[in-house]
Image 1 (tube, rainbow, N blue to C red):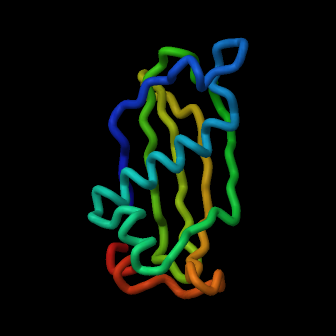
Image 2 (image 1 turned 90 degrees about the horizontal axis):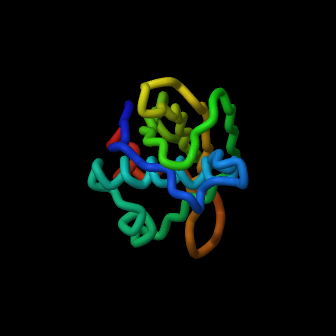
Length: 130
């Protein structure tokens, strides 16, 4: 299952002194992309939390291939390769305005019961989306 965001523009506050996107912002970009995708699937984070579930990131990886600079535009492709279990893994590909692959990454999120803070299996309302 795959989703691609609309174009996003690099803001000045997301860059370092060299005008390059600071590495810490990529996890924010990934979060933005997966939240946007879940909203398009009619499963916004608010609805997930209302069902007593929280989704902390338990693992993340980022591989930088090419820099993004202040003023650049980019898109993020989000891919979920397998049905969620007690975790859900998202893969990301970031493409600049020239469609060059600039960054690859992944995040693993765990399904936790918000009251007990214990892991749980993916709820049916979410697994049915995949």
